[in-house]
Length: 126
Length: 125
Image (cartoon, rainbow over all chains, first blue to last red; front, side, top):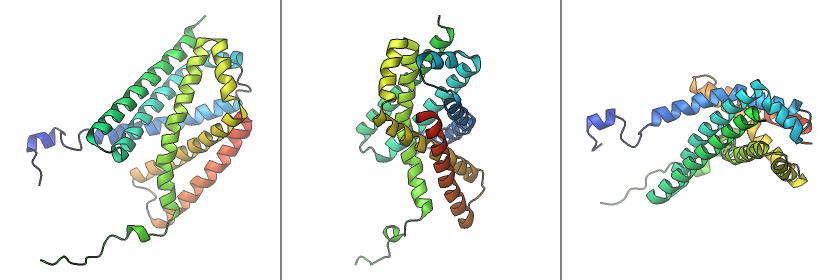
C-alpha cells in the first residue's frame, strides 16, 4: 500500500522520481555515443602520432573540435547517470549515498565543463 | 503459529551462463570507463595548457605500465559499445529469445577482442 497521495504519484515524487527521464536520457546518450565513440576510436587509430604538434593540429580542425565537444558532453552525461545507478545500488545509508551522489555529480559536471573549455581554448587559441 | 519451510528462490544454484557474465561485465566496464574518461579530460586540459603540461601527461600516458591500462580501457570501451548496442536492441524489443541472446553474446565477445587487438596495435603500441 502506498501512503502517497495520487497527486504526488502523478508528479513523480515517489521513489521513482525522475526514473523515466533517467532511463530515457541514458538511452539517448548511449545512441549518441555509438557514432561518437566509433569516430573517436577511428581518429586515434589514424592520427599517426601523439606528439604535441600533431594532437593540437588535429583538435584544431573544426570537425574534430565539434565532435570532441559532443563526445565529451555525451560521455559526461552518460557516465554521470551510470555511476548514479551504481551508487544508488551499492552505497549503504542515506547520508553516505547522498554524499557519494553529490561528489559524483559535481565531479562529472566539473570535468565535463573543463574538457569542453579545454577543446575551445585549443580551437580558438593562438 | 509455526513457521513453514517454504522453498526459497534458488538464486545461488544457478549455473553461471555467458549472459550473466556479460550482464555484470557491462556495469563493471562502464564504471572503469568512467575512470578512463578522467584520463581523457586530463589529456585535453593538459593539451590546452601548453606543450610542457602535455609532455608531462604524455610521459605518464605513454609509459609501458600505463599502456597496460590503456589496453584495459580499450577492452572496456569496445565491450561496452558492442554490448550496449545489444542492450538497446533489447530495449526496442529485439533478440530476446534464449538462442539469439546467447548468439549475440558470443558475437559481442568476438567483436570486442578483434576491435581491441586492431585498436591497440594501431594506436597504443
